[in-house]
Length: 221
Image (cartoon, rainbow, N blue to C red; front, side, top):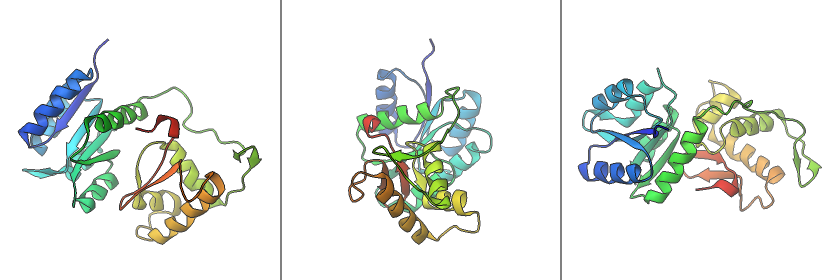
């Protein structure tokens, strides 16, 4: 069985070497690139199962690489961001990245997020979502149309970080891009209805400054 191929894009040689060594040790084939141009050409020549992408590159931004990839590929993308690059990180997620890891990061965390991203990118042969009556603790839960649409969006993207802008666009429509106060209200309502302890959510988690993700606590990294 062939080993899954990962493309690592970073202009720092030490990080490239460390990632390549650890990923190979974890059972992956690894291609590397140090520029945006090399990243796109390598991804086109040898299609990877996932891309680990630094946000700041010498000839462009990781956000632009991700946006270009999304014109012809749905490969999972995990961006690497340094503290203070929150706006770039959110822009990359809005451009189609699947997740992010903040530098300095632990290799175990990165590998866990990589496994989660590649699982989401692998077709299961099952329907994306089949929703019947929603129950919590054996009792039925009544959701408003917007609450239901939000929950469906989260369930279709379990484990994936969804930015504020993505949720607004998918649930309320393209005219809603910056009304993040909508999300705070509706996420709070969903938590009150679905979480055992809404003040300490286990399922619908906040990623500060970025968005929200729905997780299965049993499989969290």
